[in-house]
Image (cartoon, rainbow, N blue to C red):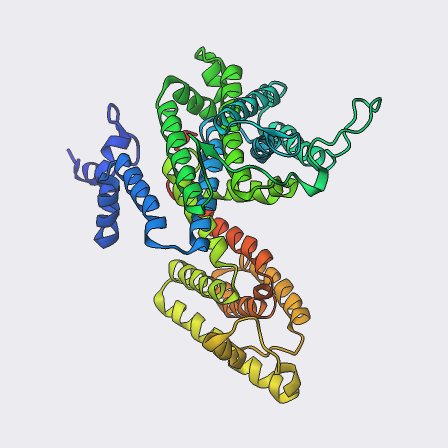
Length: 489
């Protein structure tokens, strides 16, 4: 009986009575070998509570190790974004609902605190009373907004919530002449585009917050309290029900879960967190304006959530640190340039194999720059007599590599358009042509950066964050700390 070949032949069919996920555990464990795999396993063994404690200690030390007001303010803003991302994580990460009007709840809380703690209505309520009232009112508003949309999902829910967000901006911008159906005189509720000024600072237990350090610690306490509450809710029956709705709302409903009611709870909880955050924001800034609660803020909070990983509490912390600190670093052209080159180099190292291809691409880009600069200078030296946005030693090196005209912005615009076309071409050509085209695209990227993008950091910062998100979503779609979702098809 010849059985040697049949017994030696590997089978690709699932074995009966064998859990394939358990059977492949050793292979998955051994996949990460070397120092990287060892470090990854060591990180995985640290309890989550340990990471939260480490973050708390590190955050509490910031005002103690530096007296730089700018650094402390960046820390405060980062904590604000963490709070906002926590609230959005409840709606998007846990319940799986796409809320594009979330930032309006943040603005509602800020305006609510400003109205009750300023000369707008000549009201100076106690801080604790305002915090409780505004938080509950914002949660109630979230509940009301969710009522007509509780049966909507996906794009339809996004449209309804986006409408609410834009409605808030419109009302606050024109709130200096609000009438009742046009039959009454106009009332000044929000002071229109001028916003509400003279907002009183926090006064807790008779102690008025007057320093940036005190607000930083209050923001840290707020975040830790909300983080603890969200952690407990996430591990409760409600949290497990939210995750069930996120995975499959129909299956959750068939199992007897009150899906519509749980959606209302998620909206209300997330809105309450945003309203509480708005009070802290308004108090420190002593003024509120509708422009602070528009689309750019929403995009930033979503970027934090996506980068860190929707549904992950630790991802909220890491995402806010990466996004907000990166945005601050990108304010100056030189700092932004180093990040720009680091991202390019890291992407090339991660994607180009074998190594000689990486070396060939880098050398070809360098040679291409020298040739282009020499040819342009030989034709007309004036075309290369300008300077890019980058200064210092790096800027002087780039001037020898890039022919910058006296007015670089116009040429930079054309270089940026050519760069976009080149990047699109890289996605459709074969590997050989991609490697040949890559030096040209890299040169266009460097030229567009130095001649155009680095001159306007406010725009470039958003572009860079977008590039970081695109690269991350291709490498790790679930985010830095998000869990991989396995779908059975």
